[in-house]
Image 1 (cartoon, rainbow, N blue to C red):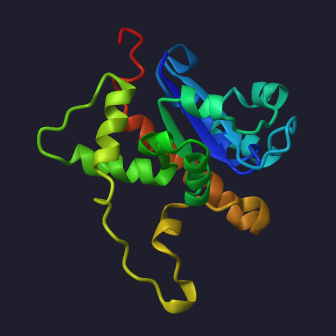
Image 2: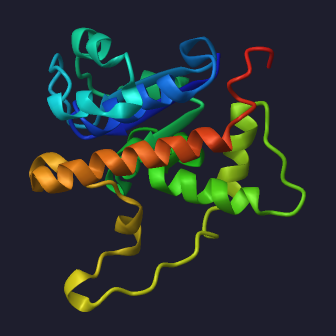
Length: 203
């Protein structure tokens, strides 16, 4: 079964919501793709953030997530087993690649993967792939083709890599937390739209 690993810092908020939303939105759900999450600095055994449980994307799975999810630290074994690794921030991607340099070609920030999927879909002759590993190879080959955002004023300037980060709402206040949740919901929805064939159990 194809496997997607989603990584953030503590594995209680961003990666948990993204993984749960992806499992919820993929046709076939857990029967189609093995979706899991972990954190680069997780304290093992922590429950999910209560705010993500209100996400409308989770539909009826919030109670199960509250009962079953406990944070875990990302391991080399989990990295090796994944066909695709999605991270909340570029710093998480760098950590993954430092642990396993071979994982670089299959590791993207979530927003980077969505942006690359848009670029690839607009490419001449592109068709959705039935195999996750093939699709990831295409995404890897498209790196560097994401349009550069307009430079922000100096007081709001972010490094190019940070434009593809999803902020940690826990350290930036309630309003930013809500924006983080909305960003993840939108990004996962767009990602699922880019992977229509991957959820087909026949493949």
